[in-house]
Length: 157
Image 1 (cartoon, one colour):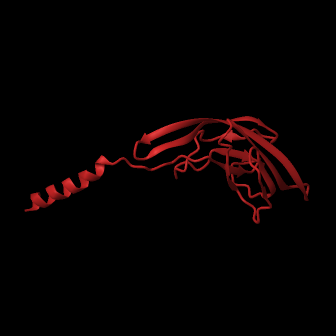
Image 2 (image 1 turned 90 degrees about the horizontal axis):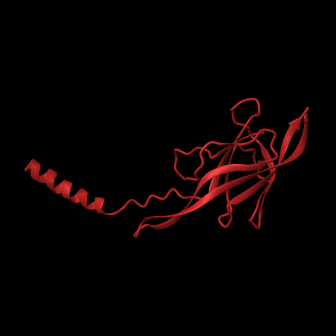
Image 3 (image 1 turned 180 degrees about the vertical axis):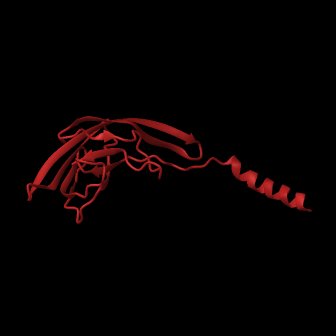
């Protein structure tokens, strides 16, 4: 009787194996972590505005200081420029600084299966140009929603 129950359970569960898993990790958001210039510890920054090339809008005055940003790349181009206006203390005086970084990437249309459809993946993320004192570091070069990908780009400011 026990073998019959195990056999029926096996047949029921194996029916689920014929359908593909439509777990999509494709995204057009780049995960940016902010670090202190002197160390790899998080740096909480108060942004005034963030503009994104190819976007019609500007992200205005985030309410809180943040150590992490999740910003979209332009899906119609192979490059996106992010322009950051942020508050920084220099010799006990708070000033508004403006810096930018241009990222390049390759778009790939990938079909997972006929039932899941196709998705656009962004790979080969690279820093093309920047005005930051220290060149931002690409930590993971594929944009992904996966929980294992904590950051794509590390910026020291």
